Amino acid sequence: MTGPTKRVLLALGSNLGDRSATLAGAVHDLAGLPGATLVAVSPVYESAAVKLDGVDNSAPRYLNAVLTIDYTGNPHALLDAVNAIEAEHGRVRAERWGDRTLDIDLIVFGQLSVDDDRLTLPHPRAAERDFVLAPWLDLDAKAAIPGRGLVRDLLAATDTTVRRVADAAAPAPAAVPGAWR
Image (cartoon, rainbow, N blue to C red; front, side):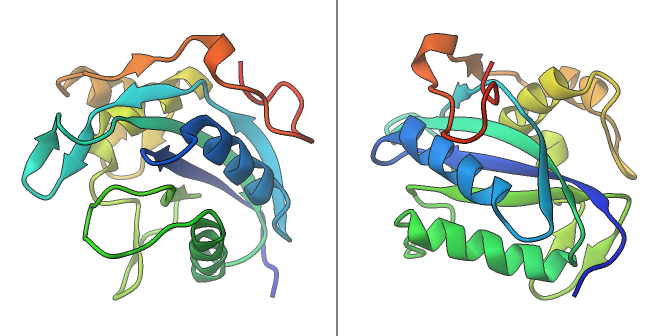
């Protein structure tokens, strides 16, 4: 089922396996979803793992990126597709906020607000996560989280600990030329 096109921001993270290859593969898979048109992919950032109890510096570090797509489906269909892509990349849901090969979060879906047992939009913790805000700001200096404010102001209010990964460390995914700057 298709509907009006919505601009969607997705956040990707990986801290197990070949993190860079996993992110590149996920971008390729997301760009190929029915109803999706890839708009932009951020530079890659590295961050400490965040667990239920807070930052875990003993856990493997994450590579993170965000991407925007124009999407004609509904948010729950996109969530199902995202969960399938995570599983294809070896995601195992054994521990809440545990280490993972791939995590993909829906951050915003146009101006839509959703709060049900499967999905909350905008993402409830995105405004506090520098590993979402910093790469998003690279894509759009005027970005805002509906109901929360401008991304640049939200990022300034965090303890920014992420670091941008050197461009050479993040290969461009196949069939998405120039996606990684």
